[in-house]
Amino acid sequence: GIQVEQSPPDLILQEGANSTLRCNFSDSVNNLQWFHQNPWGQLINLFYIPSGTKQNGRLSATTVATERYSLLYISSSQTTDSGVYFCAVWGDYKLSFGAGTTVTVRA
Amino acid sequence: DGGITQSPKYLFRKEGQNVTLSCEQNLNHDAMYWYRQDPGQGLRLIYYSQIVNDFQKGDIAEGYSVSREKKESFPLTVTSAQKNPTAFYLCASSRDRAGEQYFGPGTRLTVT
Image (cartoon, rainbow over all chains, first blue to last red; front, side, top):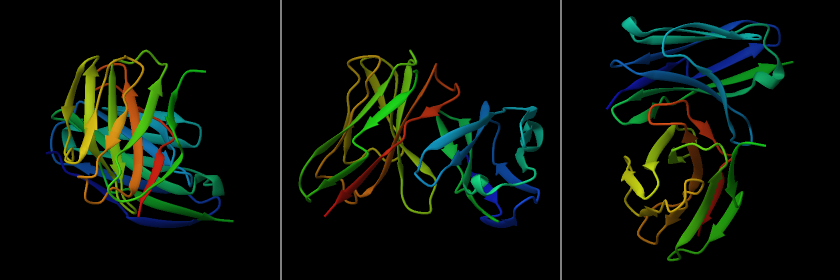
């Protein structure tokens, strides 16, 4: 199956800082999603981005499918950005998840 | 409101008992999925269904069973054969296979 690696595993930010999360995958994929898991466990859809760049408020994502990676940018971080960020890629018959990046934003 | 509902939010069972987790969606999606999440880990696929009356095993189907009798509903039964059933269970749906997946709020199952 497709391997998905996320880095860094943990990230501690001061409120207002910018950060970049990375997702590498081992094979060609048909789609890629970024999620934010809040403290209650709910997975929130951030981006559906098989290729190219998208922006949503302070968040943006870029996927370079030919080089098998995606980046999630968080700008001007807020405490509400804390949580676990997952990258997931569609390949074979399923969505394969990375282990996540745990982000802690301190006030 | 369109969305995915899961019930209950928390479930406690004794070892040896079967338990059924509910998942309902009103998004008119064809495909539905069940995932399991253990602490500090990503999600792993248990079962998926692309259409009514059809479902397929995922990576960790042993000890679980599902049914898909209606488009809106995809219940998951955790049987007594599942060796480590305590986990967080998430249901998802998508318009079609490989489409963007949306998740329900999850059920935390504790078996003692």
